[in-house]
Image (cartoon, rainbow, N blue to C red; front, side):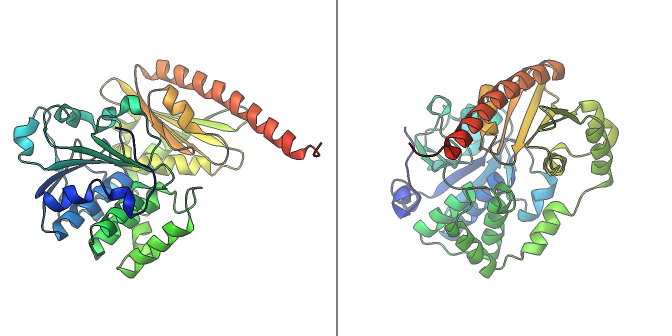
Length: 355
């Protein structure tokens, strides 16, 4: 089904009656859930519980260490591969958050044909119909985070903010907006942040839990990562490579360290984009990309089989680290030349006097 458009109350018209009629719901985020996926998942879980509904928050892997403070009661369950519909139990609808792509839900993808209930994807990434699996796709790629959409859904069903919902939504929006600096931040989102603070969120405490809790193991990994740092295109593109051996030597948590490493390198004055290649144990490589201004890394991610935002995107690619590195480097170089040429044309057109 094609995605809906818009983010007002009418955006939710198709699913509000479904929620009001239903009694039991399943809520899933994408694999390797980031702050937006996990925060949105928990907020929707508590909204549904507030309505007197039964709900299960289930993912295909464990939450990142740095994000566990938003789930102190351990609400999120881990799906056992092969568990099937019998493990899930009765379900009136299945919500999949922060993705509309089948490949992003990992082992839980096997539930798509197994569960007879409606599948509802709620997402803020660019919608790709060929990757979709849900019966209803509620996608607004103008929103800076899925957490903003879940705030709207909570409003549509008449729920109130409480401290734990507010914290989950704040983490969702804060992390996916790069600390409120990405271009999709707008006045409406800042007004939501004010509501979340009024409901009890203390921004300094969130920052401390997210970014001031690095371990000695992560510091050791940081050294390995900087030793791998290389530059292309006159210092504009930065590359880092993290092997399984580096993680084994340092003992660091891969998911917890990734954003810290990328943000550090992206802050280098000459760098427009940073690409981190991380070796995964199952014979794949995770390619994560961040940019500052004009380079749309989601185009490169799409070419590699992934996706994301203009300034933050990624893909998991089958193959050895050297082969994936070569493939990613070729894709980045092609797109870099293309986008730089387009930027030069736009600047020349803007500088030309009107005819």
